[in-house]
Image (cartoon, rainbow, N blue to C red; front, side, top):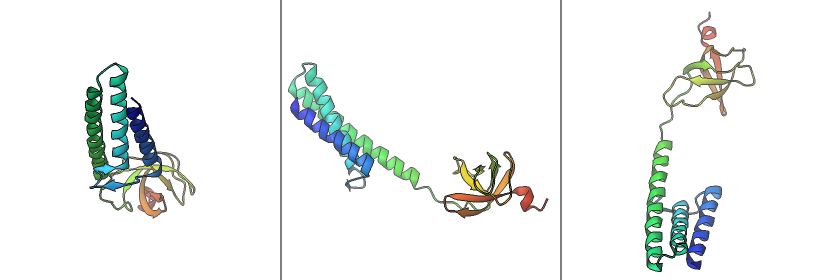
Length: 158
C-alpha cells in the first residue's frame, strides 16, 4: 500500500510541477513528457491503492495500476499531440479584415469581432476617432496586442 501511495504522490508532484513550471522533459515527440509520466504515476498509485483498500489481491493492484498508468500516458500523449496540431494553425493577415465594434471604441480601448474563420474571440482595439458599438469596422494596423480600427464609412469617405 505504501508503494502505491509514494508512487502516486510523486506522480502528482511531477504533474503539478509540469503544469506550473512547464514541461521539465519531453522525449520522443511528447510521448514521454513530465505531464504524461506524472499522470501515469498518479493513476498507477491511485488504482493500486483503491484495489488494496477494497481488500483486493496485490497482483490485481499491480495489474490495475499498470493498466491505468498505460492508459494515462497514452491518453496524455494523444491529447498533447491534438493540442499541438490545433496551435499550429497558419497565421493570417489581420490588416484589412472587416468586422463589427462590439463595444464603443475610443483612442484608448474597445473591442471588435472580426469576420474571419480563425477569429473566434473578440480583439482589443482602439481608434483615432470614436466608434459606436455595432458600427462596421476595418483593421488598419496592428499595434502590440491590440489593433487600430476605423469605421468602414470613414474609410470610404462617407
